[in-house]
Image 1 (spheres, rainbow, N blue to C red):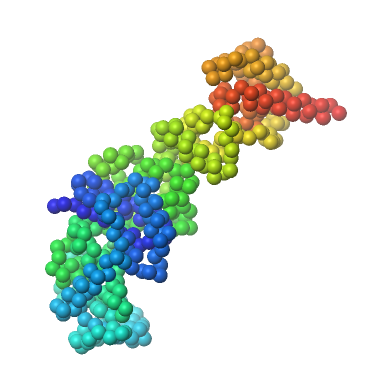
Image 2: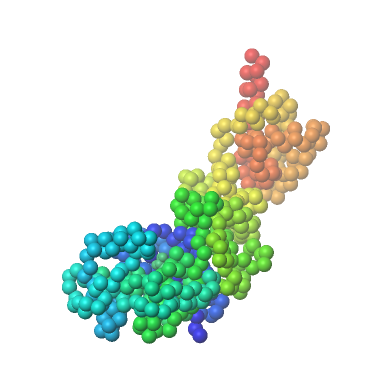
Length: 471
Ligand code: GLU
């Protein structure tokens, strides 16, 4: 059997985490089986569908590297096909016109709910043999007896009695088809072998199966993926923060990290956490998808991102860092090489944005020293270390090749003081803070002149402080 899967988003918002996970699992299953992965935009709801959202879905899929095969389908371009199938069902008496008013439907719904039952259409027009009219909808003639059974990859065997299903509207009075109908027609026409989707659709599946059968079509296999919860146990929603995948791009996450995080939402392979895309394709198994909902865990996403940043090529990260610095309005001086900046922060940064924030001190003069640091290390005892460091820095001829760590060590030895007596004031001079990367690495990135300037500025600041204290 040729495996063909599809991702069928409704373009009513950005590509969110749940949708991206569905897309990924469908993609992996297709790739693992040398099959095809189709993208279908379910845009029949004209009021809620937008072009921006279609673009956002394309953008998110491209960012994650989930390339689809063949053309992208749009349901709005397929109305003739749907109409033809509606007509076929009408002709075969498998569908019928219904003119029940909204008021009547509301009334029966209310009465059924009052009686403690499920609201469902009572079949009033089922055997009236009505013809088309301006206010007529088309209903599918659902079987009244028997049951519908399917074996879901994730949930196992699910059986629903036909008595629980009612006659679904498949076309509105204006002739436009409804969701449950278009999905079936498309999945048949596109030869979808495996329908992989969120389990919010699980109640639609028996209804859809009846439509397949009415059309004499073979059934695909189904896999309903468990929902994703937020850290607090509630269904993941906007309120949990960045749930659109492109938000993660903006927040400085790498696409391969987000993809790796997504594959672990509801699926695992032994105790392995990090998967390349090739490994995902090789190891992914639809049968091993959890039944239980999976919870979104930001600290895990952060950990994964950190691992990928450490492994990533520095010049690629430098480009991402540059993009982020542009957003922040930072002008990077020509003298600074961003690849060196990346190398300095790569081992500890969680996101590119965090890396940019940590690196900000490099790109502009230090406007203010941290108050606590000033109190602690800008003392008389720092004067001589600053002077000695400035002299030694000035004497360096080839900065790029210089042993700057040795330069600091020489200062320590010459002055016969502890390392901290030189290192700490120097760090505050170079960064404005008492923490940060190693001094020699910072000096390497800043270059000779800027390192001297910063040390000199700190010395001037210190001298003024000391003279104020004396007066
Ligand atoms: N368009 C539906 C949605 O976005 C998905 C339909 C399906 O996968 O069958 O929820």
